[in-house]
Image (cartoon, rainbow, N blue to C red; front, top):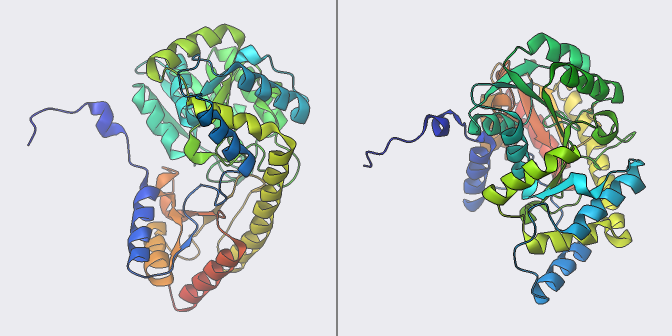
Amino acid sequence: MSMVTLSRRSHRIQPFHVMALLARARELEAAGQDIVHMEIGEPDFPTAAPVTEAGRAALAAGETGYLPAGGLPELREAIARHYADHYQAPVDPQRIVITPGASGALVVALAMLADPGQNVLLPDPGYPCNRNFVELVDARPRAVRVTADTDYQLTAGLARAAADPRTAAIMVGSPGNPTGTLAGAADLAGLAAFAEERGVGLIVDEIYHGLHYGDPPAQGVVHAPGSIIINSFSKYFGMTGWRLGWMVMPAEWVPVAEKLMQNLFISASTPAQHAALACFGDEARAIFESRRAAFRQRRDFLLPALRELGFHIPGHPDGAFYLYADVSGLTDDSAELAEALLDRAGVAATPGLDFEQTAPERHMRFAYTTAMERLEAGVERIAQLLRAGG
């Protein structure tokens, strides 16, 4: 056994528990059991053909070397046009930095904003890896309880109550994971004003933008222009395994972000960046919009179906592809319910342990990232288990 002592940081970072659940589901499938997957936040659609073809063309053309740390200039310009054309929000391409996924962007953003020992405000419930990204830079995550009263979104009032002199940054997500709710324009503007007043950074995670089922979500580049806006090609654009994202930030911060990119990653994947150019063509856009319609159809089925079974789903899950359910009317332990659903009903859903610290035993996340007929089968299996007494 090694006598080397690993860093305290490595022990503070918690595992992503849903991956253990997925591994168990895969074991059951290997043993012959049929599993309906509602646990993983990955679109079930393959990368759109125009994007794949653009990637192949880039490889055939030898586009495999390093790129500038800030990213392929043509891609930065395409993203800027995307903001202007679809959101009427002009953005200078020089404010855009291409990253290896939104995860790479979050690490860079936190490294820019937070020093060791400072704290970062995070909504609770929220995306679990954000806590671990904060730990990675030796800052401290500070969970701020959000409820249906604010549609599970962090507000300026909540941030003001939680902040202290050691607060370095605030992180929000819209549409949110695990709740699927959206931050309003007034909330983003209020958070931006509070952050400016206190001299702290604001990170707005918009990786599910494009996946909305009502009015489009408020844009951080419009309502929080001094913040770091993070987006991704993984969700709406369906490029999960290509590992590509981007940041928009004040122009004077870009050299710092590029310096960190140079040292941490050199640059994001070159073939992926060339492939992503095809995301902004009309053919790919039509595919993405048809998939958004499919997600909406799934949401419109699953939301009332779960409510009828006794899952309490407050708020307005109008984006992403998640429903966050209060299961306290069915069980006093969501992890036990998740285990029963998997082992006895063949349905994989994620207990609240990953997403919150306040009341994880009361909550579960359901992802509608599987076909409608599979969702229908999953709901029927859940109903049968509940009728049998759980």
